[in-house]
Length: 450
Ligand code: FHN
Image 1 (cartoon, rainbow, N blue to C red):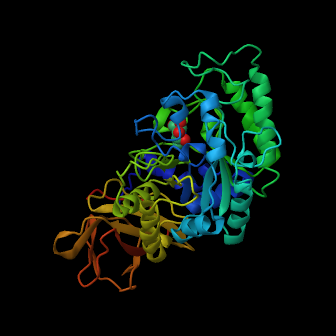
Image 2 (cartoon, rainbow, N blue to C red):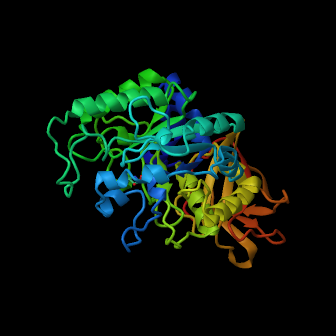
């Protein structure tokens, strides 16, 4: 019997299913999110009216009040101009669903403080615009109708509320006299109570804007526990507290709250066993709508990012910045349609999968999924191999069969001392990413070096 040397990490991977879910409650609560793997981020609000432009400069977006140093009373004039007459919750949710997305995270309130919902605690909300309809109510009803989870992005930082501190450095005209941060937190908690009681079950509360000094670890712990008291199975990201390690997004060591890490505009080099994380990313360079930004990532690039993230055990939260009229940019729609066509064929290789058992595969990525007593390996081919032979590091499990996901064509393979060679001749390659399925007996324990 060959001595099997199983490096410490592999032992840890073996324990993964038991160590990822710390208790039944944790297991149930996070399961839908881990299975989903793919969601839509929506950044929408008053900032869509200027669409990135202010006094001749054109690189603004959701931060425009700050990046263009717009005084509050001037910015408040956008309320009268925000009238998204073409907003159609059914169309938005259908575009997300047809793209293969399982949840939608929308800005209930971004840093500018404007609320896309009908809040009892402020007039700086959608009901003060000519539109006078509760966007989040229509969206949450539609998500429930179409089977997607409704989730809120809610900014801790608030550039409008008089009790939020600090002010923007350039805001000399807004006195801080009488400002009481505890009062602001109380306001935020009352709105979170509205957002978790008036719109049905909410999947995720995605906090942001936690980086300023007025927000503390103690407040983060309190807010996490408070939100969980409102809906006990809600999932909360790590930006509720102070543990996020910058744009790399994962939570640093310590007792920081948050159910998942939040890398932003980047994908970790490798999956971290037992750590839940989600990369959020824009399709171009801006979160909020910027009519000048035509630096769109290709559909192939976005599909391969989804695969890369899933192969490392993460979720992909892909952003759309709708226009002020309530429509999605054409380029966003085209990419969502392309991704949806790919997911229609290959979605099984993403949903409910776990990280690859292999390290670097030169030709692409791998995800894996338990299938009763077997394991399905999904081999995502980005770069077609020479002479149609795909080489995979060997392992001890018995291979039961191999097939091309598209068309289900059975594939021949041969096993040698250290690798498996799969014959791809005769199958149609997919320019975005071709997926080969390998069904093997049991769990993948030992992977050999190529
Ligand atoms: O400042 C925000 C930004 O506007 C955007 O919402 C991103 C998306 O996660 N988060 C913050 C920047 O890290």
